[in-house]
Length: 166
Image (cartoon, rainbow, N blue to C red; front, side, top):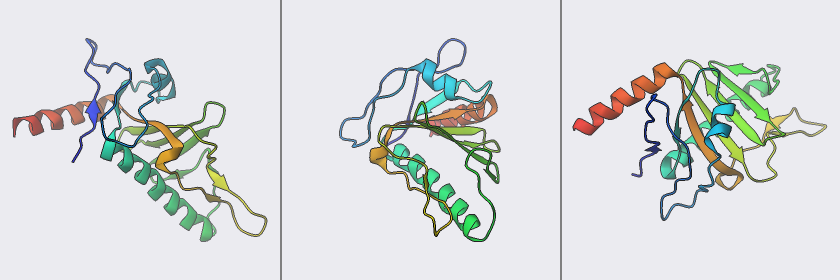
């Protein structure tokens, strides 16, 4: 199984940006500049991992699973508004101007940032049906980065160190 590649730590514990790729993967590797990544991050979250290969696929799947849950709630009559909605600890934000989609889980201390390269929009609406989400496809996503809170990053690094010992 292909692993996500973590950017090498900088002196201050942050990760550094740039382009990365894995030969043989079908996922885009046109990553945004570090300043764009950090501009999308929640306040104080400066550590990130680029999602490649199977991890990239997994992050798109996570987003779609959250959407399926939201759509089920909508069908049950729970009102839905994309911008302020929270399902458990998840928050979704669509930034149409920059074509950036955020899925933040505050309990995990993780925010997945998707840079959308296609004409994909988050919602499908029709006059006779309630609005529902449009599934995100791998081909819609130019890049995916997982940004972590300082606590989540420290936990992740501890896990990486333990895993490296075995």
